[in-house]
Image (tube, rainbow, N blue to C red; front, side):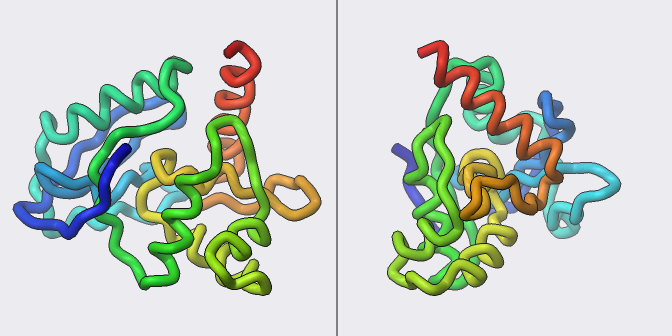
Length: 170
């Protein structure tokens, strides 16, 4: 299981290729604080004050490779996301959604103790700085529909299909 901690040390970033396009990893030597999708339709990763390090986050890169190869269902990475207390609660709840399964915004709202907070959960979900590892792609509409995703609906569908196809093989 990974831990969550406070960032200490020089901020760095690394860009890696993946089946869903370029990913930008950000953080320190000890903690990952961001996993961002790259591309023209994406918000840029906050790398202005960071040092590019093409060797950083090798454990994360290896685990992402295993995930995309269908050989990893959970990540063992030290995380340090930055957000409000409510956002942090939502992001912790997202980590509890089992691989290959989905839940609704309402389910997450109940899990964090705000049963009528579906919209607030949706906003927190949309601000998740650590995509894939904090699996915001597993949250869908109450009616089962695929709803918005910061990485784009094609990526969300790809990730859900990847997990459901691997789940059926286990």
